[in-house]
Length: 437
Picture (cartoon, rainbow, N blue to C red):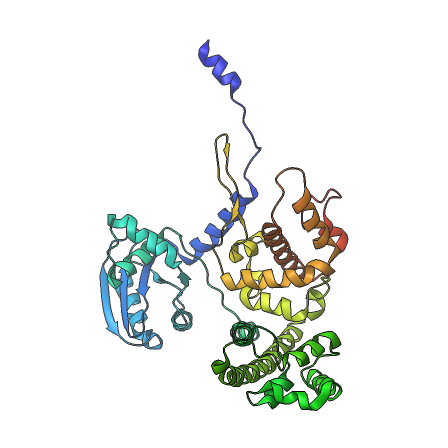
């Protein structure tokens, strides 16, 4: 009688596989094609000149291993050796596995493709975790890491790396340079602020020779004209007379450490020139990134999203690569580390946070793009208002911007993979704004 009561209390939820189950099954099926049971696994721990290679079966048994001193582009003969070893032990061929270490894995991928060998990559984080679970220590050697890489490949704890064509590869490199120039320009501004604690016009630094009080001889009218010419040279439109007048008044202000004044102003002049040169280089790189978008015929599609510039979209796509390689929009969000990390167990529901596991520069590019698009995109504006003012579980400003960045990535995936312009009605979702895209 008691067992019957228990059976009556059991409620089965769901009617089949979840969407995540189906996508996981499809991904594992694709990986199994690259790592079939008939193939031996070649695990390679890549380094600059010392490479550790191991040949294993799917149970991590090692029939052969080798250490060589060679650059990555000289490993062709090593791959042929691994194929011969595998065939002697009854395998049809080999699958190569490695960590995505710098540029070396790309060289190895090209060599393996030339020999007709499939190659997959293993996340370094998984290798580190496997190393600790191996013998509960943090013992690390290249030979052990090669075996762990091969074991993870055999367990299909690997992924198919991005193989970009020439155009997408160029966009990736331009995006990396733009990121460095943005950081350099920001550092120049911060250094200038540290030196001056205010923004002095370039006309002051160029002409004062460490003694800004000398410029008072020009008079306010001539000073205004000089500043106006300088603002135009820097790409500005107009000056704010009240600020310029305050700067002119401050020319004779002796506040601060007098002994440091001349040297600090001279150094600030150098920093300002560096910032100007960096902005020129940055503008050139951004023009080239937009040119690549034109070659890919994506400019009109990405700029159909109100508030998203071609440069902002190019910076995001430089980090994602071709979006068609992702199974779903959610996969792009996970790649950026913007996917919510759930914390539920039984009846306990913890607070969710973004995972931050993915490409940090992609997350940063999406975050920057949202700040520009937020005020000019009606869907993002309404979504932000809803998330921060809803009655239950309102989000902070930072959390809401993270949600908007994730929505922006989903939009880009849809409009690029389906080749359709952005649609406000579709992006708005239900009228109650419970979804973002």
